[in-house]
Length: 293
Image (cartoon, rainbow, N blue to C red; front, side, top):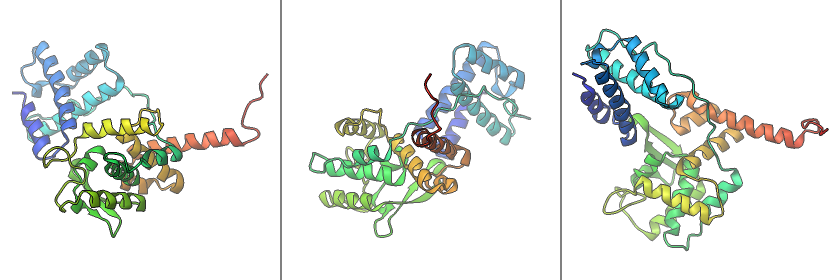
């Protein structure tokens, strides 16, 4: 008995992971199940560490990148930890396994001028006030795409300048909302009055706007504003974090604002900050550049 379906149900119902995360776990554990069948292993609970290492090696030979292998192994680790908790295995075969390190890719960000150019879309265009409110809120508060789409008017405290969101793992956090975003949201609500229970950015029917619709719209608006980078919702979150850290140097504060459980996740923005400082140094210091021969 593989118990994978039970584990996925646990993730969906009890841990309330996102649909995207659930699909990733399903793909990774489907790969593990398929490998076990080819190896003649009837039950995943019987897999030992050396066999699981063989699974990771076989995935590597198939051409999976280090990042994908890390995700595969992370799913296995979570699954076996769940089996261990429920007494279905005596020890986790994934506990001591490590995937190859993936090169750390720095997130792309907009500089401050580009961010301002993007959010200041004309409000007299069709859906202009909605677009302005959406962009201003993304950049002002560093929300995840899923958090913004699920937002209801009751979650916004316009007078106090705060928004309450339900992040990963159903963790609630409060994030400041800047004055420009509050003004844009007020104008958007005046154009389309809505009850407190209504979604701030509605889609079809009574539901929220879809994540895909937001991604497409932001790409269109970026091109319209003369930005030819690949602009996407998470880039606005990256830009928010980078600009706050650059100005304040408060890594813990940025961690709280972003809702990161582990500060190591937030630390990637320190690399962006150092990258910026290096550019400033190279441009400004008289002894920074090597003389050309």
